[in-house]
Image (tube, rainbow, N blue to C red; front, side, top):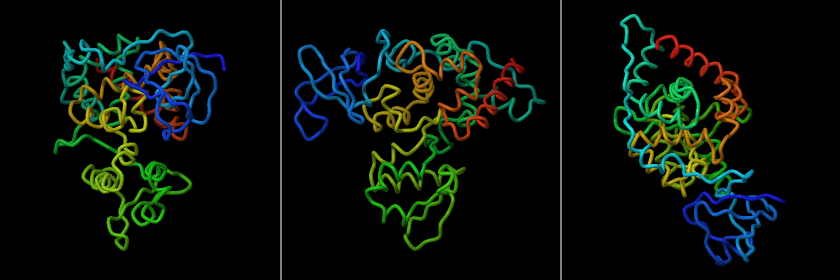
Length: 312
């Protein structure tokens, strides 16, 4: 391979072999540029200075001569920018449900959305539409808990494969359409119940999974306003899924900053960002939500975007 990469973790161990069993031969820090020699699964063999070794690929971004930049959530000016817009949308009593939802979301978060949209050069209405589609414009429920969605098939990947009997006793889903048919039971002999669509049930399942394995449970949920999956923690600048969970649990600002960091990616341009800039919402959704339901999500985002333009 003839590529370079940059480190996205605060501190990353540099090992003599592609294994965590060997002691590190050094450490790299965020922003370090390294030469990529080869790849072995999720491990990369790299050269840094006069040392050659291996690093875990979750914290390496392949570069095409792109300069390193901070993640947006790390920038103090953006973390402290006003949430509310300078001009709110006046809500007409005759507004439809969708129009009211979009107006309320803009009036709560439009200031930061507008600022960040300028940073990455997209229409703020497009970013707003994504948030409304993903979480109806709510980052937290009325009881103060962050909005989440627990994905059984992801928990199988991160926990259930090593503990199949426990997993099968408590979790199941449609084997043909893995995002459907999610059910849970706390007792191995209890009745199976669906849980999507009600946050108290989502949290019941999540808390049960967290007792089994906290990191695996957090990797298996989508979080907050943008509903970013926990397994994407490194892509938005966090060193662990626990750090991402704690940050988003404490402040809705990090939901919005996380959305823009995820869309922008680690370089100057990403396929998701380019799709939004071009108004290609189906292409955007295929990367944000996955290809299985890209057309449906793309249509939803497009409809919210048009509604935002109509009422503004």
